[in-house]
Image 1 (spheres, rainbow, N blue to C red):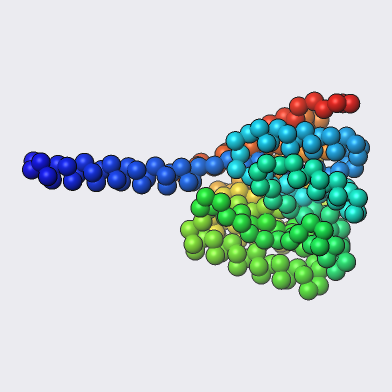
Image 2: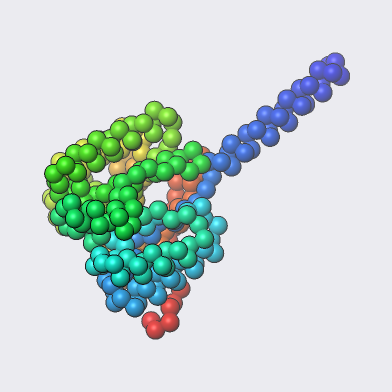
Length: 271
């Protein structure tokens, strides 16, 4: 082979390798799923301590960000939100919040929604990270129909999820209520979303290649698989109903796998 051609071929191979490594690295990351910090659910002082402990442990991980899947506090007030925000500021990594029924009310109205939006921030929005999209929803607007709010939320969610597929972004959807707890055909109850809404969302998520739906609310580990869709409501840092230890989930995402595992909370003083 001509020496010049050999040099050029070697350079080309090195160039391609150097370009492909960063691209692969870009699609590999980890993040934390927290559920129901819910200050006041397991005892106010207890929940403050466990939330602080979770922040400390999460900061020590090599995670890219953390999401908290709703019920930030048990009783939404200036004082409880002030405590929540003060502890949240201890994170050394970005944190993204989901609204829960204890945050915006079991039947949200203009007052409760505006209070949340003014005090905490947007109740539905999208962010992207390393070629992946994360769509944050307000599941209370699915649980009950709220005039001038639910329809706007529905249209935004559908448009946003379809856009991520069209732009080739693998998508995670974040909410508070799980779609269902045991079976997609189960009857409506406190811990799931209404049957008609649930089926519409399952179809939307599957048709648009949503990889996972992360939620909270159940206060026990609830894992389901619907076709390619992983659905996980994880352990809390306030109070679990299934006697599992308190803690959070660490998700690891690569170009071809999405997996998660439980990280238990270390004991806190007074427990």
